Each structure stands twice: as C-alpha cells, then as structure tokens.
Amino acid sequence: MRLAEIIELRPVPAAGLLATLTRRCPLSCAHCSTSSGPRGEDTPAEALRRFVGGFTPGDRPEVLMLTGGEPLLRPALVGDLSSLAASAGTRTSVLSGMFFATDGRIPARIMRALRYVSHFSASIDVFHEREVPRAASFRAVHRIMESGIGVSFHVVGNAADDPYLADITASIRAEFRDRAAVLVNHVRPVGRAAAWAAAREVPLDGAGGPPAPCAMAAWPVVAFDGTVTACCNQRVVDTRPMPEHLRLGHIAVDGWTRIRRRCQESPLLRTIRTAGVGSCANCRALAGRPAALEAAARAGSRPAAGAMDALGARLQRDAGAVALLRRYGSEPYAPLVLLGGPEDEVSPA
Image (cartoon, rainbow, N blue to C red):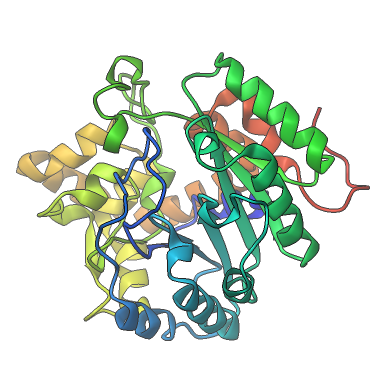
C-alpha cells in the first residue's frame, strides 16, 4: 500500500481510523507533539481488540493507522489489531520512531508484529537522528520493504527553507531510488515543542483567513484513554474534558458502527468539513460559544448538507494527495508523497 493512497482517503468521512496505542516512547525527541517518554498511559488493549474486531467486510474503515507514542512498544497488540483488521478487509499502517533499529537490525518480535501490516512509515528528522542514526533507520526500512510492505518516511523540519529538509529528502530519494514516499511537515508548537517552537508557529488550515473545508475532522481518532474524537489536533486529543462537539464516544462502550455513524452524520461535523470555521482554535472554541455552535449545527442539518459533505470529500479525494499536503504539510515537498512502488514507476521530479 502506498502512502498516497492513504492521504487521498483522508478527507473521506470514516474512511480511516487513527488509533494511538500508547504514550510511552523510549526516545526523547525535543519536538514530540505527544510529550511521550519512558512512562505514560497505554490505551486499553482489550477495548482496542474488541473495537477493531467489530469491523466487518460490509462496515469497516479502509485504513487503520496505528501510532503513539511508539506503537511498536506493544508489538503483540500491533499484530493482533492488524490481523483483526485484515480479516475484515481493512489495511493497516504503522508509524514508528524506529527505537528498535539503532544498529540497523529488526528484532524478530517487531517483524512478527508487521506480518499483517500494509504500510510502514518511519519518523526521521534531526531530533530522531540524535538517537537512531540515519544509516541504521535506512537499513531497517530496507528490510521492511523487502518483506513486501509499502514504506515511507515522515520527516519534520523547522520550515520549508530548513536546510535539513533538503538534505534528508535528497538522501532518502537516493538511498531508496524513489521507492519510498516522503511526507514532510513543520514543527508545531505543541507537546515538548510548545515553548521553543512558539515563535515559528504557522497558520493551521484557514487560520487568519476565510473559512475553508477541514479534512482533519473526517477520521475518528482513538485517544490514549480510549475516548474517540473527530479531530486529530493534539490539543483536542489531550484536553479533558474534550470539546463535546468533537467527541464521538469511547471504545469501551461504542462499537465501530456507532462511531462511524456519528462521524458521518453529525450536522456540526458536516459544517466543519464542508465550510470550516476559520481555524483549529476557532473550532475548539465553539464549545464556549453556544450561538455559533447552534448555527453551525443548523447549517449541517439542512436537506442538502449530507450531499454537500459527500461531494466535498469526493472533490478533495479526486484532487489527490499532493493537493491535500500543499494545505496541511510542507508545500514545496508535497509532491514527494507520490514516490513509492516498483522501480519502474514514474516518480515526481
């Protein structure tokens, strides 16, 4: 499975499920958006198994994305969830910080965990490279790719003109001969980067300008405590109480079908997805603005709202992964998401 296939599905309501498995991570990267470390909560394993086990061939997400913290600190759970998902026809993607690959080798328990995984994405940036050498990460990713799993790299830099981004993307392209996609983002002032990255904060989708459709309110997100939110914004995932208009339920009491319906049919979420509310901060603030909340919900309840939501998702999907990443990622590097696949495939310049 190629990264571009996953990104193209991102605007489609309930086409994917993003599940955090743990806030634990053996690395201590200075930019970690989740402030993960050696200690932290684990998402309830049995509730996750039961929730993913509720997928059926006729009612399932297309993609299950497993992240953390470091999801591969729980290799047996990764293996179980990806196997359960595969039995229903859902493909699984894993994002890892590569803690296990400091010498370039992959422990057997990690390879077993990836048996049913369709895509593997490795985080690599100046912070990760202080703990996991670039050459070691590359060697491990080669091994994963050779096992038949699609691979990509998730790269983070300070800004589009960060020299590190030019260096690492060129290095990845040369090493993998354009068979590994690259998704490039900029450091956001959240988590451990909240203080030092504040001066570099860049507008989020539509911030400071007119409202624009929000693709980030399309996929349910399982937070560390099992709460399910409609938004992947880290402040939403971490804040308790969670803004009620973005809360979809909890995996301990709600199954996939109920979560999917709430995601797809919420009048408020339809408005956010199709028209936006100006910025992520504005969206979170709706919880304290009952009049605005009511107006947005009323707009999403109109007879044509469902059709408009579906049309908006289709148009964004048809526009492709590059168009989406020009909005949400690092604009100059957006075409690198199209890399990947057999050596004879045409790659972007």
